[in-house]
Image (cartoon, rainbow, N blue to C red):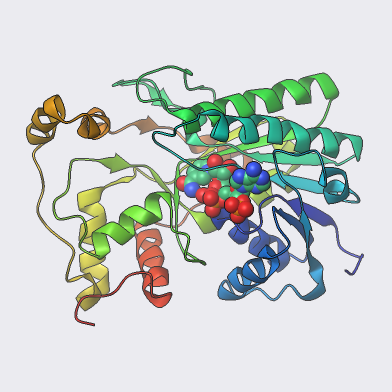
Amino acid sequence: MTTEQPLVLVTGGAGFIAGHVIAALLEKGYRVRTTARSLDREVQVREQLARLGADPGDRLELVVADLLDDDGWDAAVRGADHVLHVASPVLPGHVENEDDVIVPAREGTLRVLRAAHEAGVKRVVLTSAFHAIGFGWGRTEHTFTDDDWSPLDGPGMDAYGRSKVLAERAAWDFARESGLELVAVNPVAVLGPVTSSSVTGGNAIVRSILSGQVDSYPNLWIPIVDVRDVAAAHVLAMTAPQAAGQRFLVGSGDGLTLEAIGAVLRARLGDAASRVTTRTTPSEVIRAAAESNPAMRGLADDIDIVKQIDASKIRRVLGWHARPIEDTVVDAATSMLDLGLITPAGR
Ligand code: NAP
C-alpha cells in the first residue's frame, strides 16, 4: 500500500453501503483499509468496486475482523486517520434471537471505538439509521429531526431498531467519556445501484415490484435516500470540521409510496416494467385480513402512515445535497437488471 494519502478504515467492505463509501473515498484519493469476517471477501469487494468504476489498485487493503471478537481490531485501526464504522447486522423484522443483531451492533461498535481511541484516530463516523430516530412512535404528527430517539419498546420496534438505538447510544456515551470525536449519520431507507447478488431493504422492494411479485400495492410509504448520496454524507461527516459531535438525519424529499415507485418504473423503464402492477389493495382489506392472520399485522400497523421528516440539518451544516429519488429508483432497478437479478418481462 502507498502511504502518501490519508488512510481511512471502513468496516464491512463487502456491504452495500460500505462499497459505495469506499468508492467515494477512493475517488477522492484516500487510501482505504476495510474489514470482513473472512479474507475470501476481498475478491467480492474488488468486484463490487469495479462495478462502481473504481480501480483501487494498491490503495485498498482488507483485514479480517469480526464485530463479535476483539481479535483484529487493533491491526485494523493502526495508522488510520479516520474510521467509518458502517458494518452492523441488517435484519429488520422478526428474529429468533434478538442478541444475534443487538450484540454485534452494540458490542461491535464499542470494540471499533475503543480500538480507534487507543490508536489516536482523529474522528469516527458511525453509520446509524433512521431506525434510531423515528421508529416505535406509533401514528404521530410529530416531525422527526436529528434530535429524536426511537423508544426501545414502542409499537413496531424490532430487534434491528433496538440494535441501532443501543449501538448509537453506547457510541455517544463512549465518546463523552473518552473524548473521542464522533459523528453519527442516520439515513432513512437506502436505495440505489446494487453491486452484488445481495439485495436488501428498499432495493428488494423495487425488485419485487419490477419482477411482478407485488401484484397489488398496500398503501405503504417509504422514506428514501440514494446510496451515493449517503456515501457523500459519510465523506462530509468525516472531513467537515463543523460535523464533530453532531448527529445527522440523512433523507431526501418526501419519500414514495409503493404505488409511486411502480409508477416511476413504468414511466422510465419501458418494456422492462411491463410486469409492474397498477392495482392497489384498500387498507380496510389489509386490516380485516390482519384480524385473523398474525403475519399481516406488521403490514396493517405500517399502512397509511407518512412520517414527517425534517432532514434539513445536514444540508444546512454540511452543504450536503441529494439527487431526485425517482432517479435512485430507476438506477437501482437498472443495476439489478444489468446484474441479472431480475428477469425482465419478455425474456
Ligand atoms: P449490508 O449490505 O447487509 O452490510 C452489512 C455489513 O455488516 C456487511 O459487510 C456484513 O459483513 C457486516 N457485518 C454484519 N455482522 C457482522 C459481524 N458480526 N462482524 C463483522 N461484520 C459484520 O447492509 P447495508 O445496507 O450496507 O448497511 C450498512 C449499515 O448501514 C448498517 O449499519 C445499517 O444499519 C445502516 N443502514 C442501512 C440502511 C439501508 O436501508 N440499507 C438504512 C440506514 C442505515 P458480511 O459481508 O460478512 O456479512
